[in-house]
Length: 146
Ligand code: DQA
Image 1 (cartoon, protein in one colour):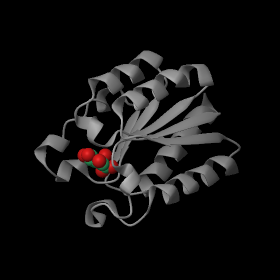
Image 2 (image 1 turned 90 degrees about the vertical axis):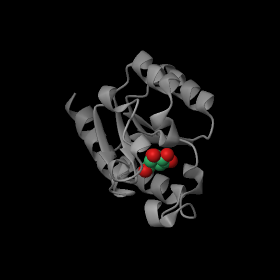
Image 3 (image 1 turned 180 degrees about the vertical axis):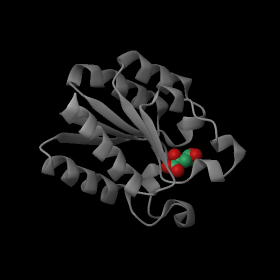
């Protein structure tokens, strides 16, 4: 199967960005680990990070024609703002899991609302990079059973 991993704005700064909240792992560390995990199970994984909302929207739209079977997405700040990205995911109807490194419920009030959670297959937050690993594990189990 093909899994698309989408990383939203500022996640390119992981490792140096507020390490007390987001940890020391870089985005590259996370992507490498996911690549390995997917490859070991015989699947194909591609990762994209963008700071631009329209690029993420277009990436989701393109996923339809690329045979993407599952999406793991950390929409970052767009979690709390982007109806456009939500609509794109609803339009393509590809199952997805929403992931956050930090526990968004233990932070500012504005991080508690997500435009994605109610249409996600599942939501993982607060577990750092491990959240991606668990999200991929859940995605692969779902794909292998369906
Ligand atoms: C985040 C949480 C968001 O509230 C924040 O805007 C981010 C990262 C996380 O992974 O914890 O950029 O999605």
